[in-house]
Amino acid sequence: MEKKAGISRRKFLAVSSGVAAGSVAAGVVAGGLAGYFIGQSQAPAAVTRTVTAPAGTVTTTVTAPPKRLKVGYVYVGPVGDYGWTFAHDQGRKWADARYRNVDSFYIESVPEAQALGAIESLVNQGADLVITTSFGYMDATAEAAARHPGKYFVHISGYRSGAAGNAPQNMSSAFAEFYQLYYLNGLAAGAVSQTGVVGYVAAFPIPEVVRHINAFVLGANYSYKKRTGRNIRAFVNWIFAWFDPGKAREAAVALIEQSNADVLAFTEDTPTTLQVAEEYTTRRNRRTWSFSHYNDMSGYGKNSHLTGQIVNWGPIYLDFYRMVGTGSWQSVDIWTRIGDYMPYRWRRPAEKSTAGEVDGTLQLPPVHPSVPSEWQLEIKRRYEEMKELLFEPFSVEGNLGEPIRDQRGQVRIKGTERADWKMLWEMDWFVEYVESELPR
Image 1: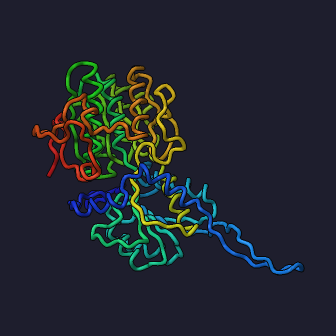
Image 2 (image 1 turned 45 degrees about the horizontal axis):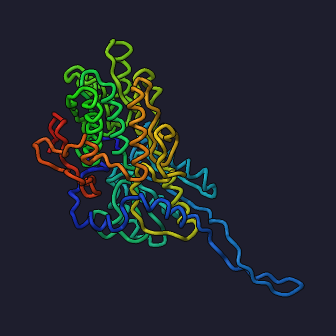
Image 3 (image 1 turned 135 degrees about the horizontal axis):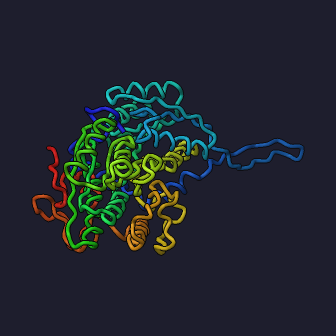
């Protein structure tokens, strides 16, 4: 994640419907793509060899090992941030360990305005594949791909066509999407909340963050209303930064003290919000819960860690390594959700769920025992259903059978409708249970 306020990697670019449609046509949702690409990328390269022996000349076709790769990464923050960039660097190491025949290197803390120079530096160092990890790097990545048709480029969190709609075929995009995990986090929140108020420390008012807030609040309302018959109340404090522990602390404290929130979710690149929850729980005698974000942060809140959202970028990176190494490149747009890159995608009974285990690119940490057993099972059941796309949080089913309305009362989802990629990608409205305003 970006470390400074200003132009963010996830800045909303007012994506036109034409671009969105093109991205969908290219295969944005990775549900069916992930397994296919794994099969393609593992295909070994075959070469023909002619050997002269005493008995004559023999021509054979043998499988050649994948060539040794050089892979360069551009990071928007420092690798030690314990959030967005740390997770990407862990994914790099994961992919390197499994591909083995690779040399990878990176440039960290690159401002988005300097992205092209960083990419060119990696190409000049011999990188066969360059991976850029900020939304704001998208246009620079597309420009570099056009300049270097013999190299390959992957952009994280954008879309394959690029903002200008002219990205070449040696460029792909990928993202690991969290909104389903946030819904499950919301189920846990509503199951333990005593005040009926949840809070969210939010970075920037862009579609990615907005859909995560909405999914969290929908999940919290589902379980809280089932328990009490009352709707959840939700408040959002914006800090306009991806990395700012000071502002995150102020926002978290305000949500507790001013809004009476006893469960806090967040999009900020440090464990600060969880640490605030731990402080209130252990030193101020005020039970407060929070989560992990991108990595396992449970050590920062041993008494207040409810569950969270964890990502492993490694399987995605390994796929691209294999594509380049075996000459089987395809320009793709991968958007992984629960179920993708799992060794066993089919749903299991809730009692045998893989939720809480290391599984796929998206992982749900273990749920705290304070969550009642019936809600533990409900979280696992929904997790398993989402593997097969049998359940969608942004649906009437995900809202206790009621249409999903925004703060103005406008119905956004009704009947059998589900949020599609376009709605998720462009989400710029809050669900009715959020009492804070969305900055415009």
